[in-house]
Image (tube, rainbow, N blue to C red):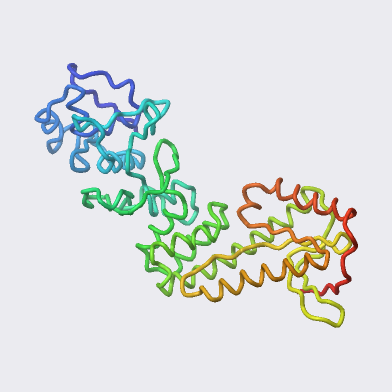
Amino acid sequence: MTHNTPLSPSTRPLRHLSHVQRRVLTIAQLRAHGIASAEANEQCRPGGPWQQILPGVVLLHPGPPTSEERLHAALLYTAKERTATGVPAQPDAEQPYRERGRPVYAEAMITGLAALALHGFSSAPPLLSLGTLDVLVPRLRRLRSTGCIRIVRSSSLPTPELIDGIPVAPVPRALADAVAGLTDADAVRRLLTDAVRGGHSEPAAVVRELNQGRLLGRPHVVDAVDSLLAEGRAIAEGRLFRMVHEYGLPDPVWNVDLRLPGGPHLGGLDAYWPDHSVAVELDTRAPRPGHQEEDDALWSEYARKREYLERLGITVVHITPRKLREAIDQQATVVRTALMASGDREPAAYVVVLPR
């Protein structure tokens, strides 16, 4: 149902506002458009045509707010005021989040479960079912949680992403804020798995944000992170397989161990082209607190193995899951170039190739 309750005849026209922002305004904005506070309060009386849904924020129709109206109301309540009159400059219909190159909803963005729903997480609850909307603001902002709004504070705000005119926290930060409020281990696992399986983020970025939020000490989060990392590696391996076949690369042998004949183990590889002495290794590390020694040992193993194989004449191409997700064509070119260059190199040492 569309609501278009008119303002009084004395008001300034609202054509410069987007459609939803003609239905959600602050008291200060109404004053700027010619509506006195007393008149606004009268319109918001019980049974009146308007309603105050948050302190200082008015919905210009009597029915329940839509999801979009709730989001804009939350941002109007939390956004930093920028003008001397206390009226944040409002966007036009073409650029709902920016005006003259500046953000309209300054120092505020949607985070938590609402942000994940906006990012398209299949495991996130629908926006209308959320009783609380999390809004991320700077730590020193003097705001309090109220109504459907929960204030989440941060010493440094990430750069928001714009989704349907709404500034939204990036997936890793939104995920950390959502997990911070959850105690259901299955719900946490579903969200973390969805982040990787749905292509929303890489495991390392998620783990880094969970670490910064001091969430990795919670047992149900630790278990979910283990599932996240396993899921992330499986997806990266699938993308590597797809890259080889979609970009016409010769078939390698997959998931192998290399050894010198009668000698030591040289390490495992995700893909190896024996005729070209070219290998691909996926870097799926995601450093975690309390595992510093393990992380350092793993990185040392990566470096040692690569250096040793290079001395034997084997070219090792190091690929991260993020590169496979965001620039798979470039990674295919890197591998193809290494394969083509193999004919110009000295023959590599003979190695034994075993299944891993």
